[in-house]
Image (cartoon, rainbow, N blue to C red; front, side, top):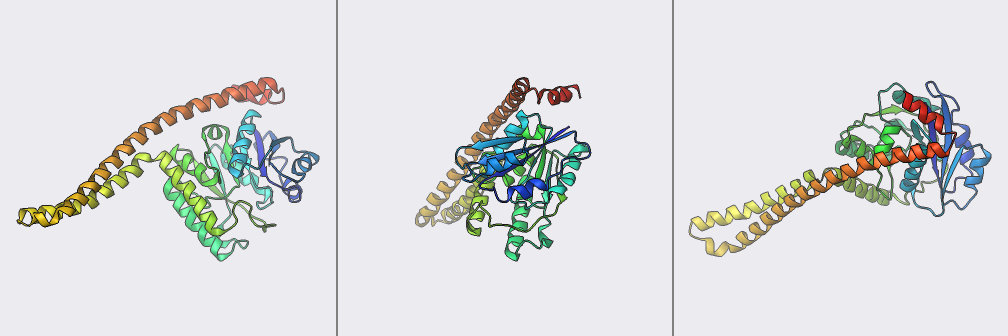
Length: 331
């Protein structure tokens, strides 16, 4: 079984050595461990540091494309390299590298498709009070939307099986963490959390410049992802709410009409009629969006097959990958 540890990086030449030094080189149940750096347009010597530290693979973006794009590039490259398990961690040494053993254990045991490292936000000494509150609130929302029991939804320390990676399609430009969980829950993947340790922050987060910006970007990502995978429920709820609100003035007009005073309450009829029409249109849009979603599922199935074919082609072109592919087919 082959494990690839991927690390998205942006200007991490100073912090990367400590992160690499803490990573395990052998693990129970794992035959080979390889390191993959995704250099997201760094302006320093991140790629050079990675190579000098013996990183097996380096993917470099010409410009900074963001964390979600770096994560996508890492997944695709790891699949091409024949990874059976992919672990994602941060370059700033926030997560304790030795805990990768706990992270991959449920996958090696065949109990999970996706494993999330739980930083135990409630008791984490490295988090301030406001951050603890926001993290717990955000995780509760994600649990509700995704149907999973993840306790630390935005943790970037996570492991994913090969088959799950082939089915995940990140579309966000901001961050992959919450969207990935909503997709995993929607696609009935086995998602579990394991407690992990963290180190103190060495610098402020580069993912966002302020807490309000983080809340807004995360909120937009959550709403978009949820609507993408539950369009009928979203639009039907909006339509039903508009219909019921419109029903109230319609009933008001009917009451006055049948009591002989309908002429002075035509505005209730107009407002109620408009709201009820909006409700019906919203429900129809939901049905249409649901049909489009079914087509998207077919496209995702085709994309999964394409990724498998691309990995097979990569195995033929790279002799180092071929044995892992053959072993997986034999198993």
